[in-house]
Image 1: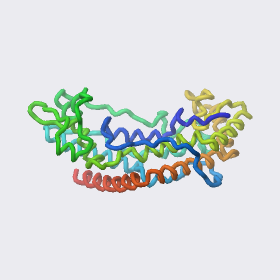
Image 2 (image 1 turned 30 degrees about the vertical axis):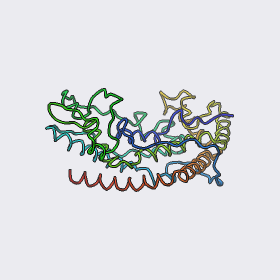
Image 3 (image 1 turned 90 degrees about the vertical axis):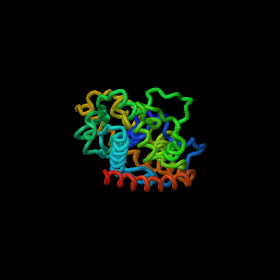
Image 4 (image 1 turned 60 degrees about the vertical axis):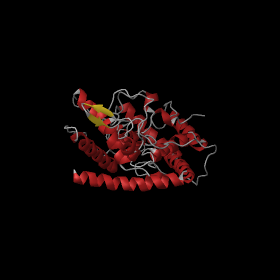
Length: 324
């Protein structure tokens, strides 16, 4: 039976978690951020017929930050970095956050008949192909770099604080640069701790997002999603398209370099028609929702705390940005 292989190419909705990851620093997570796979498939109701996935909602929406909130948090963290750098006689101007297009439009692959007819497998929301634009860092002097980033190669055996309260109490990992004390990880890490891990009970900012991603990966391997994927694959084969991956069949079909060519448009239109015939979107969304409900029930206490901390964090971020 064909498999869905959702991890082969995560859609932009899930890849967007990289936006949040870019806010955090390696080694800064004070709490666990994943969920262990369960041993059974959750009960799910009858799937409604859905084709276009753009406006789908999920239970985890209550626990993860929206794109506009990511933009606010990015601006707040940049402000905190700048405030820290001022202590050492420098200024910091980082790239402020921006909103991103709705990646759910491609959560289960192309599913908009009108856009498929115009763009095929091309995504007008991400014309570069991945929606990511590398930030160019200005050239920094050696001392300025230490103030901003801390030591380039930190001693792994050297303890570092996992919360801002711990950093202020212990000063762990701090270094001295031209007679001035620099916190572990420099101003970048200090800004992260102030915003995302002020206290020792702070829940990892990625805890809920990682479980939302996990629900997607688990649902893609669910027997009910594998069954509807097989039906979709058989439908695609009727027109000579050999693929078992509804999220990014253009890889199998050889359209990566020309996703909006006439042959790619024809394939994408048939792809959408097959999703409509098999109700792949409706089934997958229903199953993923069931996995999310299961994960929320299993992690209710931590998620409730994470939600409260997210609300506190957004209030703080607004205050930081307003104060400049």
